[in-house]
Length: 481
Image (tube, rainbow, N blue to C red):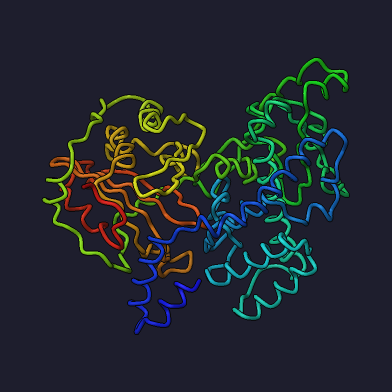
């Protein structure tokens, strides 16, 4: 903090302050500061782990006070989200909620941050809905926000939906701990685990007591909450727990029943799983727990806000570089073939994330989500980038340069317009014929992958490597010697 204060005191204008702060950020080592926090967080993690282990004795997870008191994984999940302005609640759907904090119809990013901070405080301090409503009134008055619905209903929906989904996301991370899965590999659906509903949903009640393995496809869509105000939950069980219940093994996975509905977020008809509310057919925290979340926005055209270090001519970068060791892959293969080719460069597999330490010493999460759309489908077959999958991995492992910068990303008009400032980390790898760019952005204190590609035109043809030159901005934190 003293470094930051010194920069701000010495700066003569905003641009100068931003440039100096970026230099500080590129060199700041938080290891010493983090060591004290680590002790507290580890203690919290062990407490959460004990709670999962003690579930056979019906711990107080169903107690409302415990539900309102946040725990480490829950708070981590909630606070890493980035505010996302929206015009309607369908603007952000399903797994996108793992990284985006939204309040339906709220387009002011500063107001969203205030709402998020208020809920985060409630999670950390254990205060409830009544305290949040005081914050809700204050924030609404501060920004003059005109919202739909009654005050009591709207404040409750905002608070309980965020608390409930973050609670279940945090629980998911606890239950997926490798040691936990080894000891307690079975999950049991619990109707009304955190609060007994006045009127039970028939289908949710029918699932009560259902026991399946943790990796059963059922959980991909049916992991709670499964509708507005759904209070269902999941508890872990060991083989011995099953034997005490008089069972030799888990139940048979229920057949997937669907109804056809129109999905405005996708602009077409979809098969909606029976018993699940629209938009709830996903596993809260799944993409976050596995390391990354998809983004279909390609950031190469973003406007640079802060430029500090002068960049060398591209000819010099090519002269001091090395030819790409990885080959260009054959076209026409499956999406999974290309994704696997990328992941193999880090010893990773599809469906899981690994932490990779880059040439500048940063820990970067790597997973197949780098190539996924918000709806979960792959986006790697786009403008011919798939044939460069292995080379894109090489660009991260062995880059010519790594830059940290600040970029301005345009915000769609229906989400409030203007620009969003983001700190990004850019991996550059160039040879005489190929230019590769991988971009990570700093969200909630973590580097999150945004896109990886070689610049192409609309016809899918590779452009000059000069197209990458625009993104070689900010502070140069690594260059090949």
